Length: 231
Picture 1 (cartoon, rainbow, N blue to C red):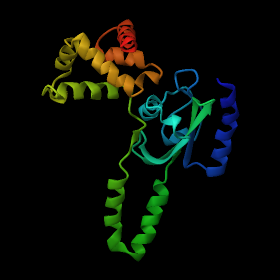
Picture 2: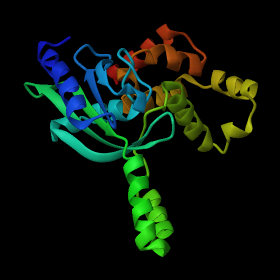
Picture 3: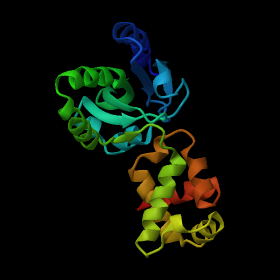
Picture 4: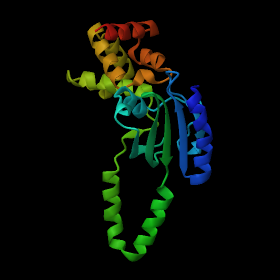
């Protein structure tokens, strides 16, 4: 663990005591290259624990180097494994301009929203349904905390095949496997490039997961990544 990050661990507990059980506080260590959680409070909100990896959204923001021009992102929306809509913010922890960690806060405001709607329904009952629909449309999540490496890989493969008018969702698992196994090296590298651009390989265990979905070996994935670096 980076020495500077150890100073943030107590902040996780402090923020938990300050904000209460509706706020999940998460500290990620990016310095080690895997981005795993090193401290978490109120993990019941998303079902995560110490040692769990980055979300795909977080890895994507790292890969895009958003932290180079911003110190934090505020009030974006995420959805937990349980389907709860969360309001999230992330602080980029940097050392001499380089990212070493993330401090994320996920706020579950569902019970407060429900209480507000109950009060408003007593005063303006006709407006409640209309406003609820507006909120749901506006608050489309930009992060799905339950989204796995396998899910993202399958999405990238589906996008590739859709360009040649093949809908993977209409095929059986054995048919999908056959198509993926028949992909050319160029096509496979294209898939790896897309996953790399999304920051997937910053996530712990990504090589193994992607190899499984592409039906190839882990050394093959490393070889494809080397080809990308060379080009």
